[in-house]
Length: 181
Image: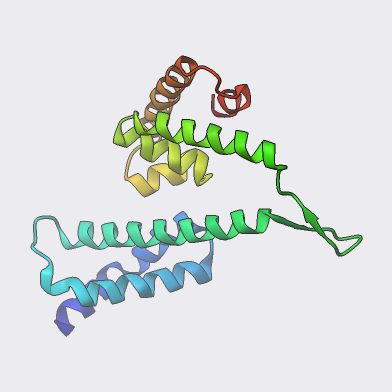
């Protein structure tokens, strides 16, 4: 096992680091993610069945670990959005909606996610990465292992389907339709 691990590390470490760095755009995070990838590889190497190349298997693990890191970062950002530190007054601003606004927003979000569930898996992946995770087309293509044109096409078709589904639902806030399409 040590020989296999050393070979994998020697053959793919630099390119794997570059792949992850490209996805997360943070050197320290990329280094941490690479370490986590190799820990997972060590733990799972015995279960590797050889249905794909070792490189494909390794990059797949890296992609999933990087996506998890990106999701964690986006969750942190969303938590910080609830508090806005005023630089002049050093006071926390209350950005929470009023109760009636909250109910309306909550229902609109539920409708949006229901409509998203009607899209294909590929469309859901692209729309989530692009609009919920706020990733660029290039980043989305790298994560999914697709070309940028495939991401653009899938995004276009997904948005068209979402718009059609949302147009069919009476009472949905116009702002949600406008914000998506």
